[in-house]
Length: 264
Image 1 (cartoon, rainbow, N blue to C red):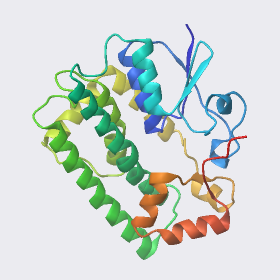
Image 2 (tube, rainbow, N blue to C red):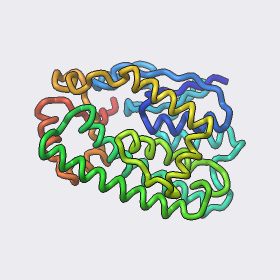
Image 3 (spheres, rainbow, N blue to C red):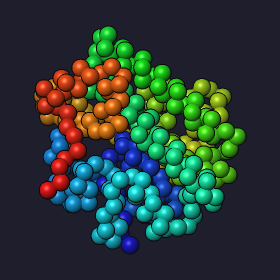
């Protein structure tokens, strides 16, 4: 049995997949595709994922893309221990939580990266976008705390699908200086989640990449047209609705944003 994850350690979508595999004690290798920062990915990676996004999973030669579909495949291929709760209603609940963080909280964290790493907007516009993002993250934290309720884990009694879906994004917000309120249920949950070996190892990989300059001077590369950020669906929506339409139009005129590639 050979399992490979096409990965970037800073991708929360890829982190979900690696945490799931580690929870199930499935051995895997990782590979970081070349060319994704400039829209030039090719070869085996694009054969596995024509959208040219991480993650993609290869299992005995069969490729699966999209982090949620990959989680479903992992659950089917290695059913024990189950990452989903037993009750259908709880299964639906954690999948809905995943959908919210995948498409809403991810977009805000991504927007903060656009400001922090890529310096898309500075001055008054940068301040406006940063303030708006902080407010939004706080709102999602409040929603997550309500969803957690009195449970130990989002899944219920045991760590699972809901938890591994949420932890990369909350950690991402923390990395931008926005943490759950100390002593809150969400903060206590985050400490428990980060103490798990599957999460700890995955976070360590991301930390190592960041500390060794994994993003490099991407703002400079962006200005030179050597790096293009993908603006798709929820990310594009976040930038526009939060007041950054100017960022989008400038990126289009400078040729340093990209969209999902057409399929050939």
